[in-house]
Image (cartoon, rainbow, N blue to C red; front, side):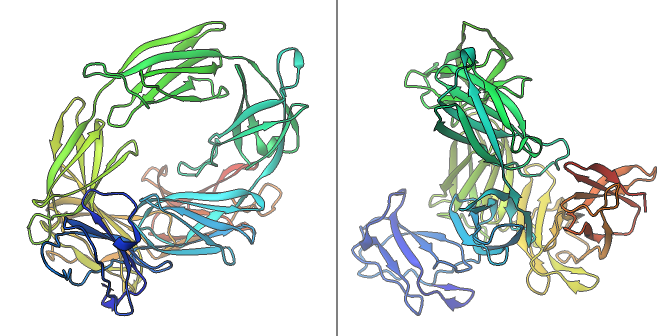
Length: 580
């Protein structure tokens, strides 16, 4: 076993029969030696897949290969197996405590935790796709977080948000103390928040206090706190930046019940385990309540605050269902009746490798626009079938190649083939002012029917090579290391030089300071650089940043043109620079 030509020692190799996802016994596992060699014995005479887990801390990705058929051979040599490098993630969390750790959940739901060193963290070997990063401390309330897609530019700059104490006083009928309650804290978007700013995580506290007084620590910003004690419920908004240290009183009143039944439209068979949400409609201060359907498809959610609500139902393999606004009245049970969900369809196709041969055993990942992910593998003829998908936009991924397909409402199946070798292989070099841009993330989107998406990183010398793309219109986005916004380049494939496209990134920059009316420096202000159109009006944001503790900022990679800078900071309002 090798990685980039070198032997990999200490990798764990697990053997599994095809279709077997169970944990394997020790006899079905092995560890590679100094020369990268492994040996597995006493295996069943069945088709076998190998799962390879790299040593901890290595830059390689876990991989699966096969199937292999041992047959009647005494020993089967599967040849050299190559591990691919995973993606790097570098970042820092300004203001984080010394004992903080970075917790990363990757696209395969694996969890990685690493202590911060001088406020910085580094991880290697991460798979492509969406990852969440959260910096936490065991001894301090607060956090820093972000959601991103790998590969991406780095380092990732986070800012620690320290928590502040808030005290709640729960009172029920006639002002009596509520001595046991379930408290839920839901963050709300600030009016001055950036569109992609990460919200704190919602969480629930179950506690009791003989006087009905509960103390918590919340990150600065707007929240809605919901309390529930039996059939009694209440909710209220909290602005932690303003209410920190104060004692707030929350009055609980009797809640009502919403019930109904969920079934599949084909035969109206009951759906057990469907997820039901009762959420306020136009009343942000009311609590959001959740439930699960039983074996009969029924649900009954108690403690609903009287008012206007809507019911949302989701079940795997079915389209999402949302009710029209419903009126929940005091002393009444609201029955929504029989809810019928539309059964999802399937996506089928064939995967061909770079030689045009059907790819056997290729991992196919289907991601629905609602975030649902389903995975399968191709058979001996390269065929795959992903079932139980709700109608909507589906992303199919094999390795670094992605294709999008639309599953119409009510369709039984659609076909989408993936040819990993057809089309134009685009190569080139990314530079800034003639200097190579190492480790820049490059994403190419084809704009025709069944558009594809591929992602790679530049090498240390700024060179890149994209997997084959079909001829036609495309868009290439380059995210340089340390940048927050990509540079977009429209192209038509093949390009003039058939397969070579050099990309020069803007080399300019904007520097300045953020100060308040009294001339004091404002740190932590969010900044947006707007390019102005021919009429002098803001047209698009081309760079973003945050001011330092001294109020200074630098916005890099800006092309020549007319701009203005917008700055916002909670408690300070907003401001704009004159056009320049």
